Length: 268
Image (cartoon, rainbow, N blue to C red; front, side, top):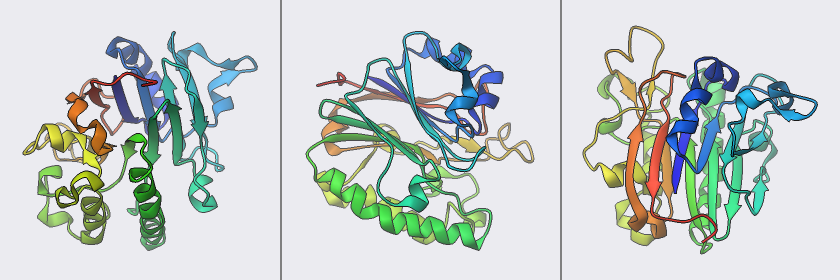
């Protein structure tokens, strides 16, 4: 099973840059998209999704934000899911289009878009609210007996390995100590089989790869980046990890697609 997670920073923009020419060649079973920045009806005509946004052999499912041109998540799948879920029960989060889940047998694949707090105190406050509210949801999933892969832009780095300019960003959203403590607690090695597996870190314990670069100051060319995009998996999937890759080029967004291969069959 191959899963790609990708923050498109506008699905129409990524398509114009060739994303849907690149994607079919990746042989992915699932694609989890964040920041579609489009209502589903804006991506097609009266008969459904335009073929320029739907590669042959895939089905697409969307959770749009109530606000047009904002946020939004999607899942593309080769196989028809048993069920699609798009709400977690808290309207301030759900209405921003930040969660969609596809279920296949005992496996759930989620596309998540955790809020950024970089625009100011109000949104940072909302981000902390989301973190507090989401923790018991994630704990419940861990205890459910289902296997989960949580894909998405979490807008938080875990350690100095995940950001080029560690010291200078300690007071910036995405690198704040309470944010890092929250994410690291979810993935704590000390929790053993009661924690989420950071798939990249499990495969590259000392890796220093990034998935997001600012559009300012040639950050991408200089590799002044942040690792904000994750696939967090339940412990039962840890032994199925076979490899991962970050596609820095071609450039479709300020984020790079993040691919993980699992020795797992959908519907198992």
